Image (tube, rainbow, N blue to C red):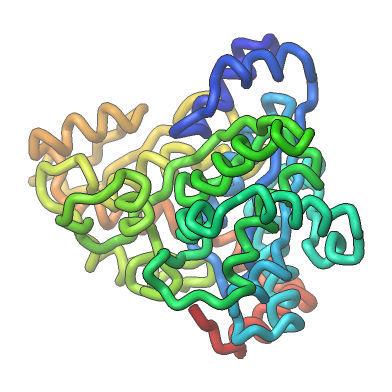
Length: 369
């Protein structure tokens, strides 16, 4: 695969790339650059974290990128997730890894690294301290949305340290690329600012799209990144998201209630599911992934036009905008395909006794914001 083909795959992942010229130079210089994503183990995960994450990783690894998936257990502890119980956080991390196994993420080219492995390394804390010393408190407070917080929240001292740790993670992992959601953009840009000053480098930032929650979008004017963060799926609002652990009945019920105005394409969460998950569904499993979108068939009675198959998301969106596809048919089809995607995950946690016990353990925990 040549550099332009590899670059095209990364473009499919990145809603924003800072910068594309740097990315091209990196791909020309390294056949296997390192990218990282990090996650707080803080309860069960929704389809954007489970399915979309697998799709994006599989596209990146096909482009030759090698992933380091950072299990941010100490970060979740600092952010008071799972009531600040580190053992519960770590059990949740193991559970999430099992989910990704079941989706078909390309684990042959993914290395899981735990924050708890870093904290015994003096060199790591030197990076954290150097970043903290080089950054004003105001600059750090501007990054707090990475934790699902704002500068108006009452923050603990640990939460103020968190962004410094996350920026240090990039350099300690040796990551050429930070491949996280747009909600993590501010800390990635902090790393680009401080890296050269501290003798490191500027990591390339590939920020993926933050999928909408199922509710209506906010009407207020706000910063684009803050708006995307406000609109995204949220564990704290279970009705706003479909979770990897949801039953078929729960998936159907949530989609039936979803915001989906007739003929409206922009900021329509059900159409987002088609664009980023359903048309991309074969990418979720690296063994079945293939270039291009996967066809989607809308099933409906003959009196309403009969079944219609769309080869691309653009074709579906165009017909929806013209009123040729009804919201009820769109929701029904979304539920059918999402349940097909989720069924292997359900089967894994039903048939694998170790995974089943881990799921039951995590579901017994109280999730805290």
